[in-house]
Image 1 (tube, one colour):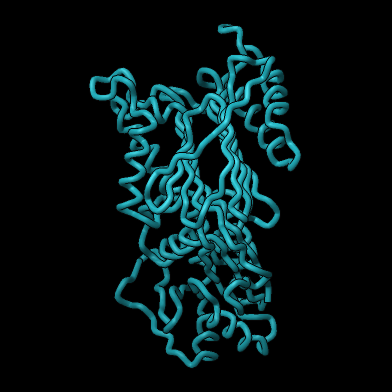
Image 2 (cartoon, helix red, strand yellow):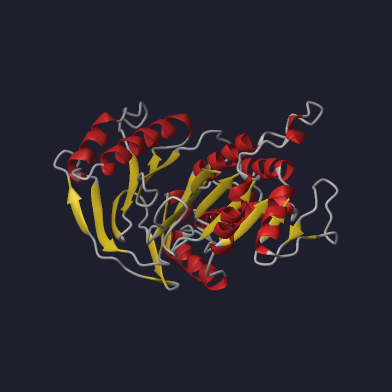
Length: 401
């Protein structure tokens, strides 16, 4: 397999790792901010929108969700007019019964695989861009509608480079702690910027999701008793060369394919995981490498892992994969360091996940006495893929052999 190929085609030159974190205003069950994004079919270029509705709770959520949905649709079209789209969005929003205005701020980010990026802001705090750990200023120009003269938009057009990070957030982040003795004017954008710079120095390879979680947590720390007085949303885009992994699970339908599957795993340019006892035996036999069971780190709730030279992780099959899906559903960065927890960590550290699934039936898994939670291999793989794509924004490819 060539360095720029996956099992199904070429690897994109730039991967956009996207993550966001959100908390409702304390005491509210519904967030008044809305974040939506869309990836192109090639799973590379993206459009992302963050909108902050007037006030908080249900009404704010309706305003923000309508704005974000419309903005996402307009921005996804190559010929969209920013001014015309903004006028339609503002005109379509319901009017607040109390303040007699319809208002929702927004930030729109549109970025392609060639690095070309456009950011449109109206009312939200300015975005932050970091290159080699330092914040950089991007020039902008303003647009103003004759129909909405009090609502100016800032437009930024620029090119990102590999390892750049773009961060944008609602004012619940920048105004966190406002009115307190220590933060009378709030954390402010420059406070957030200084924190991000320090964090990037400490953890250069931090993921988009981790970065947004850290920023939101730090903003909440500025509040009294971690009780935020406004909705908080932080979104992060991390532009980088794709990180890749392959998961091989289950013996191929045709035993004559064993050698080819082993070769694909051996030559794969990225992290390598083998799941399943029979699958591990195939890799061991075809590559002529010893399969050694790890009896030093035994988890009473999980089958032990093993090791094969050149393979990052070797696990048991269906049970471990099912537990992996459970960990992804209820993600906890401090989850158990067992085989399933390690597999989750490897998956989340990578961007493109190729999964090679053997289709030979393992009769042991048809035993009706086994727990219903032990799903058949194909079903649990689909479950994992769905979680990785929808919850963690990964690009997942599945090939059945």
